Amino acid sequence: MPKTKFETIKVMLVDNDSGRSAILSQALLDHGYEVIARVEPGPNLLAKVAQIMPDMIVIDTESPDRDILESMYLLNEHNPLPVVMFADEDNETVILEAIKSGVSGYIVKGVDMERVKPIMSVAIARFREYQALKDELKQTKSELEQNKLIDKAKRLLMQQKGVTEQEAYEAIRKRSMDSNQKLYEVAETIISVLE
Image (cartoon, rainbow, N blue to C red; front, side, top):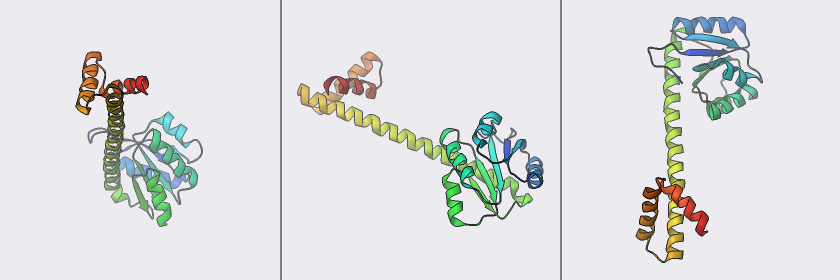
């Protein structure tokens, strides 16, 4: 995860052009980032990320190829990190694919060294906002699933025990308190027994 403004952010730089990456690396260092590794893109990119464990990834490329985009997609699914991509490719489809793969910032037509700091800051802010939304969505989905289980357990109790909805809910709640289980856990047990 990105550090606070008082801690150095460790960057893994991905580039297959050593001259170009040296310039970007120096720009990142000048703006307070620590470049802990420079690697070339390729099929082992995810393994390198797991080994190096950066706080952020910066990719400098002429055009992001399928391997890079798939690696970023998998990274975003399993170990999300802020990713900034500097590319020459100015194709809207490619840019959309990069964003869909989890790239936080896509900068076209090379690196303006004076803008490195605000670009990185915006990418980190976008990443954090996206992760917060993603976590909120995950939480909401989980709560909806739990509520569905509770509703199903209530319906089964109402049908098989001849009680009202309120009585069914109270029965689930009492069992939850007595057994120190969550409501949806009790609901799962009721469903498994009565269904």
